[in-house]
Every structure is written in structure tokens, then in C-alpha cells.
Image 1 (tube, rainbow, N blue to C red):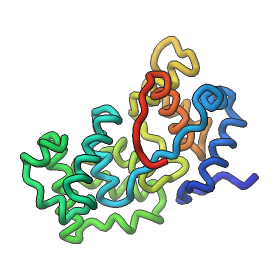
Image 2: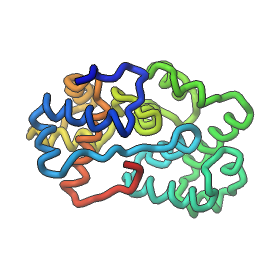
Image 3: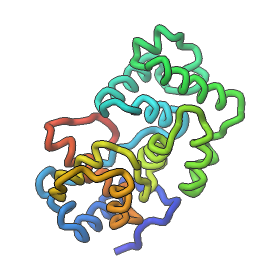
Image 4: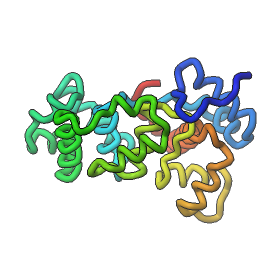
Length: 220
């Protein structure tokens, strides 16, 4: 069996199933997720501007709402690119599903890219901490959104979106916790899966959604 991926290695359709098998073999609780629901999907977001907009749309809403809004945005633009995004007025963005605040965040992001002050392409091969440092300097992007971008768009194997409620609920349910873990405690709990925390997160989301009969469209 090959070694776990390094800190800047992206999971691929070839390496992801092996990472799933490795974690299931090492963690009986995660193995149970596969037995109940099958292997977790390899959910992915596009890289660059589109992936960050997807993350902005997902802030404080359900996965289904974010996916639906991003689908409407794709329908309006074809390709979700900054220049095209800037042609949409506030009314159109509200109809798509952007709150006023999220529209401002996405517009500011687009303007930075068009102006050349932000180059997302340089992040593709940058270490995780450097990606976070750059993204946290962008208005409207906090730690959770930066880690979601690392996990879904750059497909880093060890990205862990601290503060994600569904992950906390999944751990509570799967491990029979009497109370929901606080964020710091949950982050410490997730250390058992390093350097494959992004793979473990997909197990947890898979269980959370499957228990509730929810399916989320996306690349798998």
C-alpha cells in the first residue's frame, strides 16, 4: 500500500478510493459508515474563483441551498468567472440566492482577481498554511471557507473545516457522545485521522446526509 499523501498532494479519482479503504481499515466506526451507506462520494468544487464563490454561498446555509444557488449562477453565466460575475446586478444576484453580504464578498473577490491583486492560480501548489494565509486576507473568507476551498477545490488530503456543524453532529451520532463536542475538542478528536482528515470529513458528511435521507448533487 502506498504512503499517505503529502501536505500539498491533491486527492484524485485514482488515489481517493485507496485513501477511503485505508481509513476504513484503520477506524472501525468509519468502516461502519461504508457498510451502512457505501463509500463516501468524492465531492469536489471547481478551482479558482468559482470554487471560492461556492464556498461563500455555503456559509451558514444548508449544502442543498448552496448547491442550488451555485447551479443558478452557472445557469446565468455558463462559466463562473470573475469578469462575467461583475456583469450581474444586485437584483439578479438576489434572485440567484446571494444575500447582500455574500454578493458584496463575491463581487470584491471578482474585482481583486480582475485587478490582478489576487492570483488564485499560485495557490494550487502552495502549502495548506500558505493557502489559508492568502485567503484569510480576502474580505468575507474566514477559516471555514478557506478550509472548504482546500478540501473541495484543491482536494488537499488533510484539510479539516473547523466549525462545521454537520461534522460535529456526525461525530456525536457515530461515537455516541452524550453532548456535542466543542470546536476545539472536535478538532483534537480529528487528529486521529491526520494526514487524511479531508477523507474522514467526507465519511462524516456522508453519514450525516445518509441518515437524513438527503442527497447532494456534485462531482463524485
